[in-house]
Length: 424
Ligand code: PA5
Image (cartoon, rainbow, N blue to C red; front, side, top):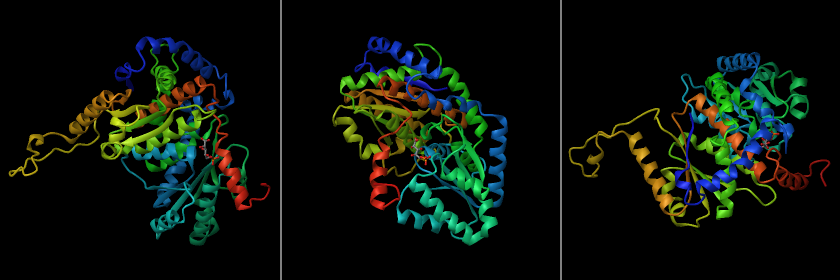
């Protein structure tokens, strides 16, 4: 179960100030739960943890078929259409891991060249994910990969290797899936990209990768009960209220820091969730992330002594999944014998504790979000926790958490420069 430790934020936001902000945050939670307020039509993600059994079986069946007939799966999608799956796949241990690669995340020819080199001689399948069906990066990658599938496996073989995840009714990908009879999964109504990880958008790639998605949904369902509770002790509400209060204390940035490299993509998922949901009307904390202790040797200096405008939130897991014991050495030339016999997990945890203390002493608020261990269930819990908290904090800013009008601006200019028909 997730635990939050606010103790190192009290110097910046006193407990009584946080308590005073909770009624407004609770009001926003109630309106989310009642499916009211800004972006009320995009709250369908609240239903995702209780997915229909038939849908999960269909996902499992198709995933098994992809595994049986291929050497790897290429997931094509960008933003909310891939980050959740990537976060879960990289974070979670798998008994029988099946290789999953990602494409459609950039327009880099070098990336695509490397991707094709990795696919050389492999039987591969493609899962193309796009709610709109018109996003340029995945649309280009899908066209290139589909062409390759046709060349290698012919029309029938290519069709059998393509799975589309898209809007139930509309969009170019929905039309293509119908015309070409691709296997497909629908993104339920009212579910936007960055809130879609518990829909087929995240579940299908995870199932192919070998993650027990039912466990992930069960964890999410339990978290949904807990973090929608109308209670001032609800940590999703407290986290949202804290984030809302900190800008008036000079905080402009939230850095999600982890000592678990396997959580790096989960931090990327969180960055999109927070950044795209809140960054509107000149408001919102800028979300950044660090992976430690790697980044202590690059960004640690800034965190310790740079501008005091950062909330540092540590995302940690108490129990290690693996361990290594430090060996003794007869010569002790490196002077490490004082650590001989100790476990690397304990040393990593000590580094976390020391870093937390140091950064708090350096004058920034430090929050800790800790799970017991990284499991499919705790991943589901984290997804729901952040989705609820960020929905509340965005609404506290007076913005719609579920749109992203600013993203359209680069697209408009790029499409015009590219000469897309209908753009001016
Ligand atoms: O959160 C969002 O809505 C966006 O990040 C989208 O997921 C992203 O832009 C990809 O869009 P689409 O799934 O329509 O290709």
